[in-house]
Amino acid sequence: MRKFLEVGALLAFLGVAAGAFGAHWLRERVPAEMLEVFRTGALYQMIHALALVALGASGARLGSWGERSAWLFIAGTVLFSGSLYALALSGVRVWGAVTPLGGICFLAGWLCLFVAARQSDDLLGT
Image 1 (spheres, rainbow, N blue to C red):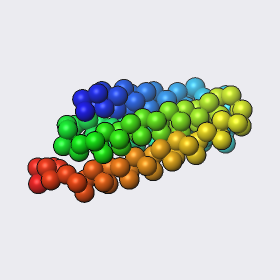
Image 2 (image 1 turned 135 degrees about the vertical axis):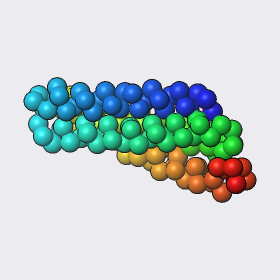
Image 3 (image 1 turned 180 degrees about the horizontal axis):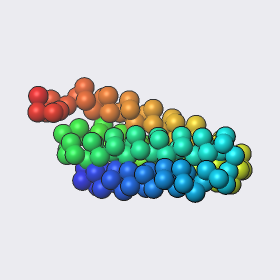
């Protein structure tokens, strides 16, 4: 699970960078609507990066369901946040069709985490 801690930390770093990019450089270059789209991508990226950090820090205690959750959070970040970044930067609306696939990955990831938590006797030392 260490790999998920590392990926989560990297995605959090990139999420902060994306937020700063949006706030300082993009603000004057794209319409307000597209800036909000970009911010949504950065927010969801950060939320799921932190979830990955927590999953990675849990070690192997969450088992295969925890690993499934982590992979779904990564896929969700790429699809959801990535498509929103592409939409905001390019203005090409077709990227919006990809976003719900990322949202489905996020939802599935949270359900997998729920299953992992229900099955874990060692979660948080309890």
